[in-house]
Image (cartoon, rainbow, N blue to C red; front, side):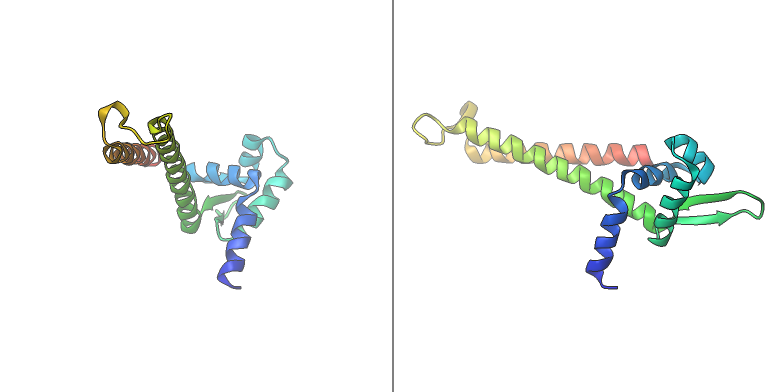
Length: 151
């Protein structure tokens, strides 16, 4: 299977809301299919179906404890994927926020004659640097809070 096909398979697996909910719960601890069924308010066969897809894709391990219980846990690949997904969301949202602030600064600096003026008596280059520094600080704060929450 090529790298592009694998990515398409990963996208197919991760686009399902139920599978993402299962992965988010397994981030916290191991669960049985019955426990996930109760938490997600889904039929146990539905949960088992989604767990089997996640297991085949390499996101989840099936753990049999020698008794009647079968637990599921995230693999290291599953943990890395979820971390990467969260970081991408944080960076993307920070970039969008930066772009919106930059656009609003640019719009506010255009005078009626379509010439760029000095907003608040500051050169345009200084305003861009200030906005960029704000973006960096917001990104660092969001990432630090994510690290604190996730451990």
